[in-house]
Length: 494
Image 1 (tube, rainbow, N blue to C red):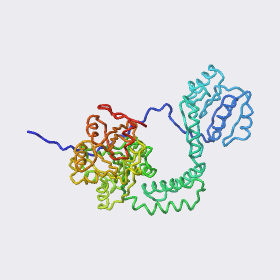
Image 2 (cartoon, helix red, strand yellow):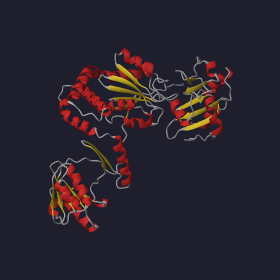
Image 3 (cartoon, rainbow, N blue to C red):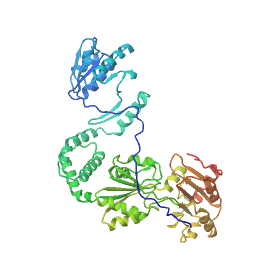
Image 4 (tube, one colour):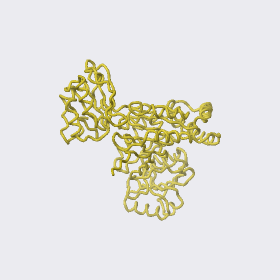
């Protein structure tokens, strides 16, 4: 007796990826009012003393011959006091310190200094001698209380400095006053009586305003306005919401800013198989991530199950992101999910994404509406709900030589689709290209005519997802791009 099993899967929670190995653990020390020791009187020692003072440490410098920079610094420290002992350091000087920095000229002195720190239980840094260090200083971007540390573990200090310069240019100096305002307002927001979701919404609006107005000085009325807005939204925030987000074709750099904000504010993310794992790196680490995969001709969660899970989570007050490859409004069953939310009176919104066709065309550097070659673009699905080629495709439209046709989910049915389109008048010599995993590092392409493409695609074994694009606008590719030979699907071009 033959037993048939449904090709289904159930929604499963995706385990968060393990942290990649760290060469150094970034730690930010609270040194206000704590004793810090600097041994040595060199300019390098002066710079470290300045950093410690800026962090509000009480700095004691041991140097028989302090340099001019140290003397000037001690006379006018950034914050914490700097006291210079005009003598060499002793082991007892290190005991009780929170941190100790040594400007040691020889390895023997470095060994002695590191051993003294270890015996006293004090973390030690020996300037420019990493093998004796318990910790390292990195390049710093200072928008205190917003502070960014950059480390290359000593491998490429110049590279670290270059990154710091980039960040300095990107991060407005006005962020410092907004970060300070956040510190002042945090306790007030916490005691305001707002729910957890409403408080988070306050900080989301605060962040959006700070990013948009970094040069403005935070005022009391900013706090009141944001608090009022968060209070007004508290009722809806308690009910939860659903946001359909387009993840784009795969390259995480193609995410929109609005998509990133949605991922960073989500409590739960329901994502498809076609979503690149790199996209999930933009989500809040605390967010629950659940695979509700739907793949053509493969295991798939039932749409009703996805709808029920999405609505159920939102009803418990969670902010749910339904993350879909490409654009959710292009063959993404968005209408069914929107309808389910509206039926349940759940707030729903859509964040569009770059479509697979747009991503593929951008990498090919081919316009889908090239002048004199294409008058319109049409999107066609390669299979219906039953997995077969739909019967209601407008074949005459597909055969139109002035149209650029984009076929989604075409792998199993491209042969039949092509045959019927040619019967309806499509020229078999029409240029066509199949693009697999568009915009990803392992993107692969087959450039051909539409008459030959089905066989080439079947022989190549291109990994999914695949999109097929048909039209005269791709004519230049046929003559200038090498074709993928049988069994040799590979990335062509850049």
